[in-house]
Length: 60
Image 1: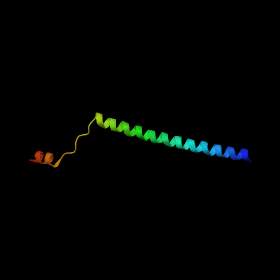
Image 2: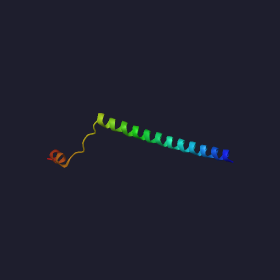
Image 3: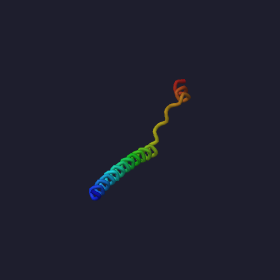
Image 4: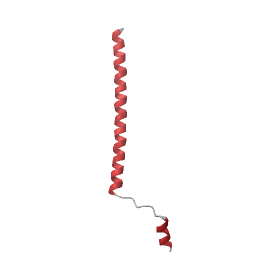
């Protein structure tokens, strides 16, 4: 009985570790994706939205 208990505990903890590891991996992937997006934004600065004064000067 004690042997089967140990096996059960081991399998549960292993699957838990795998779950945590895969979760961390997903988080890392997301962070990398955000990082690359931020780097792209810095390399290619997006055009600033036209301010009301800019629109007025264009119209006048």
